[in-house]
Image (tube, rainbow, N blue to C red; front, side, top):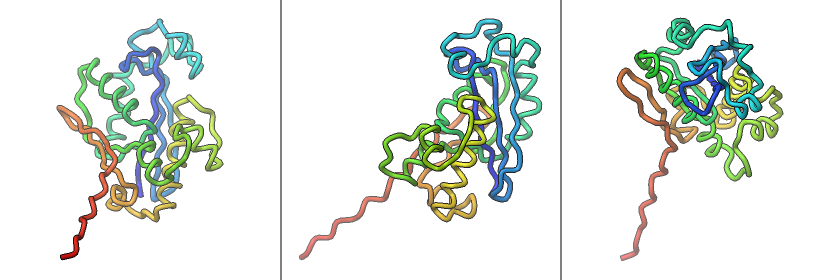
Length: 206
């Protein structure tokens, strides 16, 4: 099974302020590579101190980095027509959409899934489903809140979920992990969601 896990770090609370993106590539069920790009955000040189406290990226770290529209020339062919997975995908996909809109770039065609959503279905009843808690539970070590490390951790977590559910191909993914893929497409998007279990029909004796 092939998929890509994605993580953004942002410079401010604005969704269109990515300062780093990380991608981890899974090929045939194995992690093949992890790449990261520092990005000079539109807010440069301003970074919110709260955001810096989370990821540790400062304005000086990105002063010579490309802007998102420049990075996107390299990223877009990688993501086009792929399955992209992110932990709390509603955040990462909103960063991608908002930033593409800011730079006047069309959305790519891709499916995506949220590892928070399917983790809640695969490992029900856990007290917490944040990335750090889930990785601690599964013995996945990583440096939290850097894009490369978070995307790698998300890939490892996804592979464990696939193994746990005996999911062997993309066609089985929605049914076995009990989620509906989200979609990005030129001109719009559809959010990912948890599948609603079919209601059992009640039988009544006559």
